[in-house]
Length: 514
Image 1 (cartoon, helix red, strand yellow):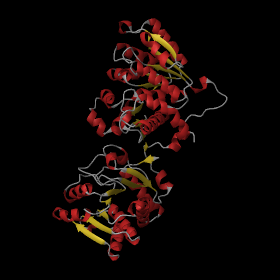
Image 2 (cartoon, helix red, strand yellow; image 1 turned 120 degrees about the vertical axis):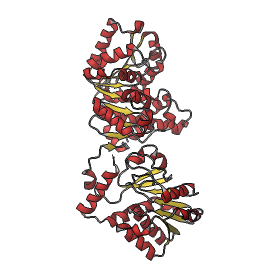
Image 3 (cartoon, helix red, strand yellow; image 1 turned 45 degrees about the vertical axis):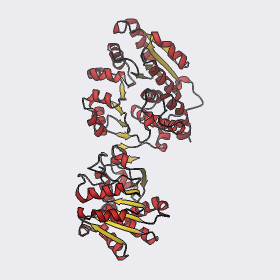
């Protein structure tokens, strides 16, 4: 599904109204009806509903909602924050109708009136927020700021119309303050700011409502941002065929694990198998190779020595032979932050001609010498968390957190690599500028080894034939959905990486192959 910024949604509306000829008042009516349809069950036992409206088109949606609810015998009070004399166009039509129907309307155009607003909302059950729409780009101040504070303090269920007032629709930043909604009904398509944090914290349950905008209006917008859903995931998922063998589903090479972090090799190798890889070969330090053979008996294990912090000629030849065998490679989980990791990474990306997933210590090695990328023969997917991304880009973590899409796209375009920037909203960016926002997952997945599992999932999908971008997007989706299933079974506090692995087959079976 496409995700849009405010200017893209504005162009969709403009084209629909001016070029196709669907009047704006019709779209406003459809929007109001869709909100009522999504929320009417909440109102059946409500004694009082308050609709807080601004003076723009978002307020017009609120006036129309007030009229529809009033005509359904629901007690409604409409609050106007601002000067009603500034209401115009389609919003004015709905405002005038509300007045003709003698709906209870109050206007607040001064901060000194806020005590009265407190009284009005003090005993209401539901508040609709229709103050600001997706076009807001300035900080909320004055009477608007005070009104939002009062709305948030009210002991009522809060429903945001299109977007919570105060959330920037383009990046999810909070413009001073924002209504904290229990539910947001947005129109036509999700907006970027509804999905990114901190804005996502203010959205509550998100509903995307159809308001009658035709596909031709949407299709002509070349949005670079998408989200994955079950239908698209099913389309991406590699097929299994009866006439096949283990080589049909990918020969995966996992270069991971040291004496201090053997678990990383186990988690990556096991998750690759659980995602469907036909054969996994694990290249690991000789002294700890028995851990992999014990924990993942299906894996083929090859070993090397880390003596003298360098790779021997014999081990290098062994590695080069494996590069010729492999369909895809994962390198870095638990590999160690030292010279030998850098040497192995350099050998891999300068000699392998398919796709490599670089994670963890592989990223740390890459961040110290990005010139390695100039001699590569392979496609590369990097999977950094925020700290690793900071080392890769020289941006501080705070700046990355506030600009995840921008920083990920910049890295992808600069080095022509696919970037999986792991955070509460993981961003997958491709060299062509396309971006996918992952909206699944939970805080229980913030646990040791979770990233190793993701690397195993992605490299498995590569081995089964997906390209770098599709494998990264579907891999993140499967990983987070498996994490959500683990949360449902065990809760967030006790969730561990192995719980995610256990649920990978369940997600693929139940969510992707129905």
